Image (cartoon, rainbow, N blue to C red; front, side, top):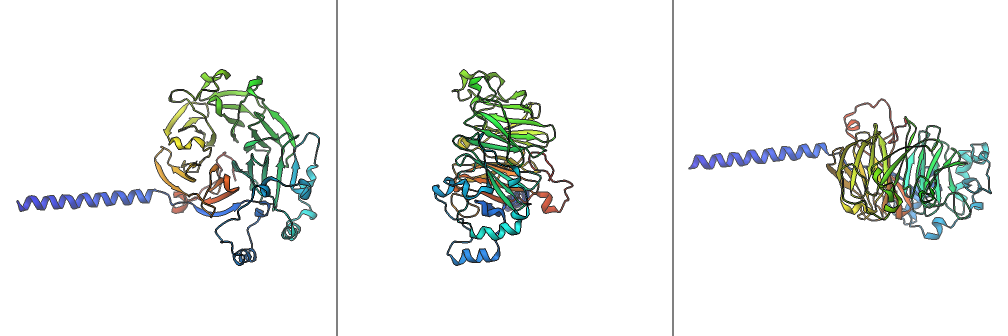
Length: 416
C-alpha cells in the first residue's frame, strides 16, 4: 500500500517537472515583445527631439511617453502656401519644379533646423492607413483623410507631402509602394486606380481605371511590389481577389477568386469559405518569394504564381483591420483595430503574443491599421485614429543569438 502511494507521488512529481520544462521551453521560444523606438506625427518629427526639447516638454507638463492630442482642424486644415517647400500640389494645373524639393544650401539640414523652431504651424497627419520604407531611408505614409502622402527623408533631414484634394489627381490614397527606381505607386480608393509619381513627387501616369468602366480595379485597398521581378500585387477587396500586374500596368493574373470576376457579384460576401479562395482581401506582403494575403478572417500564403501554400484562420474581429506585416523570420503581424493592439503569429499560424492597448501613450494605439517591417527589423504601425506612426524594434532570434545577417531586406525584398 505504501509502495503504491510512493509510486503515485513520484509519478506526480515527474509530471510536474515535465510540465515546468515544457512551459520554460515555450517561454524561451516566444520572441520578446517589441520595444518602442519613436513616432512620426508631424513634419517636425523628421529628427529626434534634442535633450533641450525633451526637457521643455517635461517642464510643460506633457508626459514624456505621451504625444500631444491633435484637433481635427490642425490635422488636415492647412494652407500649402504657408509651407511652399513642403507641399507638392498634385494638380494637372499646378506644376511645381522638382528643384524646389532638392537639397540645396537654402534647404540644408542646418538651415531647416534653425527655421523649424520658429514655424507657426506644424503639418500633422490625419488618419494614416499605410506605411512603408525604401532603401534610401525614407518613410512614406498614406493618409486618406488628409488626401496626402507624407514623405520623411531621414538622410536629407527633410519632409514633404504629396497633397491631393478637390480639383487634383490624388483623392483617397489607401496604399503606397516604391519600385527599384524609387518611383512612388499609390492606390486610390475613390479613383479605383494606381497613380505613379517620381521620387520627388512629380506625377508620371495612371495605371488602370474603375472596373465598372471596363478597367482593372474596383476599390484597390493596398499595394505591394516585388522588387526582384518587378510585379505589382493589388488586393481588390470587393471582388475578393489580388490583381497581379507588371510595372507598365499589364495584367498578368488574378489570385484568390478568379471565379468572381463578374461585377454582378460585387455585393456578395465571398460565399462559403473555400480553401485557396480569398474573402475581402485588405492587405498583401511580399517576403521570401511568398505572397501573404490578409482576408476577412484568414491569412493565406501563396507562392508568387498564385498556388496556395498554407492558410490559417484569425478572429472575425479583424474584419475592420487592414494591417499585415512579415519579418525576416516569417513571423506574421496583424493589426487588431477593434482591440487596439497588434498580434504576432509564427509562420504556421500559431499565436505568439500581442502588444498594445487603447490609448495615446507610446506603445498604445487607437484603431491601428497598416504595418511594415524594414530591413533593420523595425515594425512600423499606422496608429490611425491617433494620427501618427509608431516604430518598434523587433527582437528576433538571430539578433538575440548574435547571428550575423549578411544582407538586410525589408518586406518588399529590397536590400537596405
